[in-house]
Length: 50
Image 1 (tube, rainbow, N blue to C red):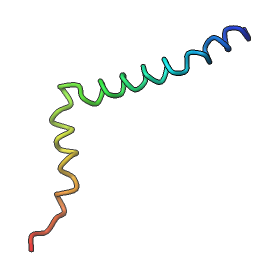
Image 2 (image 1 turned 60 degrees about the vertical axis):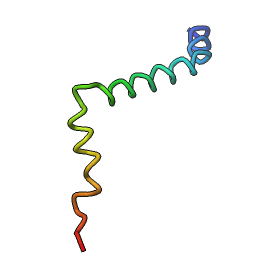
Image 3 (image 1 turned 90 degrees about the vertical axis):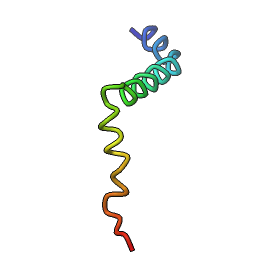
Image 4 (image 1 turned 45 degrees about the vertical axis):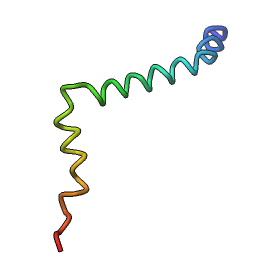
């Protein structure tokens, strides 16, 4: 069991890269485009015109 733990720890970079790619794919999935555009407009909703 200890050897398995050491082997997993040696792959930390691979785990982080896979996590990053997974999150990036999830965020930029084409189905989520409309939702992302709505979220991007949040800072401008409460703006009052002078």
